[in-house]
Image 1 (cartoon, helix red, strand yellow):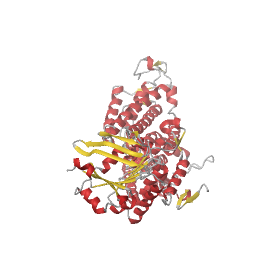
Image 2 (cartoon, chains in turn green, orange):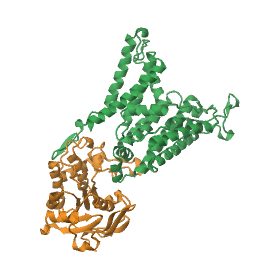
Image 3 (cartoon, chains in turn cyan, blue):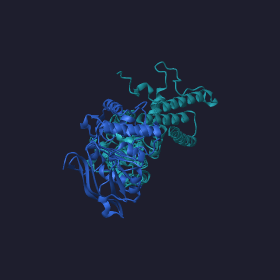
Image 4 (cartoon, one colour):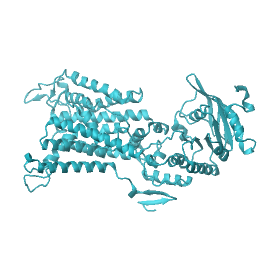
Length: 357
Length: 261
């Protein structure tokens, strides 16, 4: 029996026959979008033969415009971390609207444990707590942030799984609650001046490192562990999953907890990157995270999609944003165009499903 | 109690609120026996199956499996005890492939200390799937395809192949051919015959009189939540008309007369 292709009585297992993965379509779309921006850069009269993709300053050390690539991925990294969790929630046929405000609330809470006591020799003017909470090791704000995320996720999951509140409603409520917590935590004042240790975890390209490492970890988890398999099974046919003996309720709580912990971690990183935390942070993050997943081919009906898809979806969103800026499209048009693209992605998903059924 | 008895229920009862879906069902089957459960819609057939398989919790009564009294708290318990069920509504996850569906809820794994994140043994599950499908003679073009793209018959065969893969001690099929075409029905019936040859006990819930007479040894008829007849059809004493009159209530088995209405 060879490893690639064998059959028993009409049964075959043929690796080469595996269907064209959906992720390839998104990669293709990504390439097409890049090419379109490249062409636009060449032909639009006001662009003066610029290049979107290539280094236009004719340096010898690089061919591609690395700076642009870095900015693109840095722009999407923090929302991308949220999207990794949202992806898992959507695969169970749920939705999580609370992630944006959760980012803000976690940023506030984590930063309040990550402040430094002395700023240029003077007492920290934005100090929230007394000196006991100053200059703590960086693990403290991270742990507090993740614990808060787990707590919020557990509440979301419990309401959705055990009390059968529709995910949309439960997380919409949590959306408002978290925004309220973010405002209440410091009475609306920004919390600033983090310790060097806390600054480091979100400095420079660190958000990208976190995003890509977490993406790899969760790709492996979704693909190769029982947790991943059951997540897909629940989204695909919840009744079948239940009858197969999967503890659907407990599993859902776990999925919402992981999603909220990822969003919380995004908040911890965002506060570090910005070196400040404000109650208004993370506006629309939940929607962009959902958009990344949807563009990445995660079906809102559940059961289908992958972490790879979401990472590609994040890249598509990043490239479009960067591209629109590059061709000097006004911000208002950018929003309209991005909205249209999200709708188009969902229409495409519906169309694919109808064809498959 | 003799070990020859695969399944025995005593006064098995299920109420849904005020609805008495199943009342005092006393049921017994021997090793290697194939028993059909018949009855009109709402007669309590599926309810009976759901109590035995742990999908629902019974209101009252006792159940023994191979002489041991059992109290399943969920479908997984029943499965671990060796009861394998093919449900009326196909309990398959459309987006997963054949091995994933076969092993759903009891995956072969490595590194179990990882808890919910323990690793899947894809290769082992694939091989067991092939072996199971071979045993039942089911032909599926490519087991790595998602179930979504398969025909009703193939899907049903996948559901049935679970039983062959897991060496069940009791197989229950709830209307396995209700939604299938002629050829697909024949395929499912062949699997049932193979189970008979292998001496594996089976409970078949069916509306199809020809199928029942072709396949099983005994028919138990349910009516209005009660068992109303127990017919040994291999004796040749009963015809399809007899069974119909038991189902409709024109006749009632002597031993069940006291509750007849």
